[in-house]
Amino acid sequence: FDNVDIGSNCILQDCILDGSVVVGGNARIENYAVLGYKSLVGKNSRIFSKSKLWPAIELRDESIVEGEVVASVAHLRKELEQSCFWLK
Figure (tube, rainbow, N blue to C red):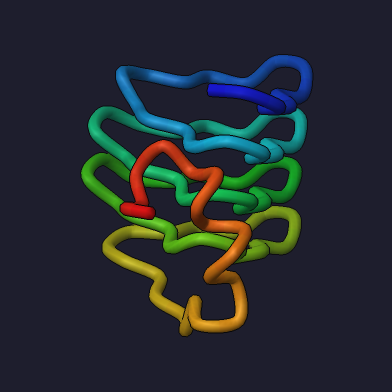
């Protein structure tokens, strides 16, 4: 998708990254993981298979996620209209 920034030495396996996602160096994103619009994954982080990050989630360096990280997106309504996964 548009405006995705992937750091060096990352491993991305059959995952989906929505627009404006940033993945720090040496991160690993496993099978079927979904990173929402404007999510940020810090360096040396790991997102396990089938995990989901909602839009605008920011993970610090060396984070580990297995499951779903959810947050309110009401304040992002206009920006989410640019996202490929959110209805206008």
